[in-house]
Image (cartoon, rainbow, N blue to C red):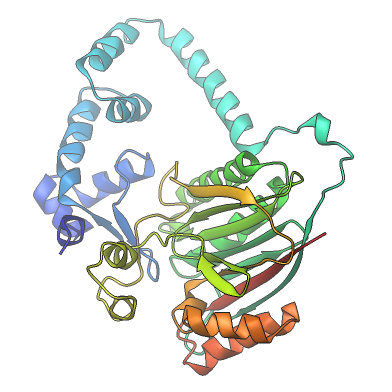
Length: 362
């Protein structure tokens, strides 16, 4: 097995090995200092790795030395003795001046995160291409509520699969899709990335403000069309985007889960991954920490290509070859979306099922 799989441990075991209480570990997580290494997409339960034991002890030592969480975060990102010396010098600064500077920086970061810049040169510019989209989301045959949400517009196709249980999972996915849909205007890949990062911060802040929302998060996969004719994709978690081009279906995104990594390394087959004990354990998700690592890319859009964006409730039930056959046989976009979901439901519908089918057109 891979070391990162063998080393996963629940918070209780990590607490015992690190000597830090679960309460203190949760406070470090809430401060964005010690983000769990993996998260269970069904329950929102977090796991740590043995490689984080040193970080836990370092954080605790710095905290006991009086360093604030922001300073500890900077030191962890760029560890050096020079950082400690710099902090010692900063402690000699006037407290009032330091607080004013931090408040000013906080305001600037807040503006940057929530207000993507507008390119005035784009005003009134007509897009050269657009997306024709159709979507469907279903609670499935097993779950009590639907934590999936979708976006289906003329320039954006996106899905989000919430986690953490009600009400957190539903709230996280709806916040993510609403913010991304509002912020992405079709300007660029940078704009879509900024929108997803803004959604991550909003979910993180919302969870931190309410005890009943602790542990909430969501995947997201968003495929957008820019005014310059690029197909841009951003994903976090295990929701997917696939491209239908010249009769062939290709997965565009990599799933951010333990089993997906094992499959990529040739240690599991795709079929074995479906029954693996670590299935559903994500290595990335929105809302797990104050910052998030994104996968993203852009390439020229081709008229007639189709993009399928879906949650794991679809592709865990319907393999790619069947999806490709259905896309080849069905021209109507809404009929395609409906048939894909119905096929997943007929196989058991063990999860919420969501899909957006988008076709690039002029």
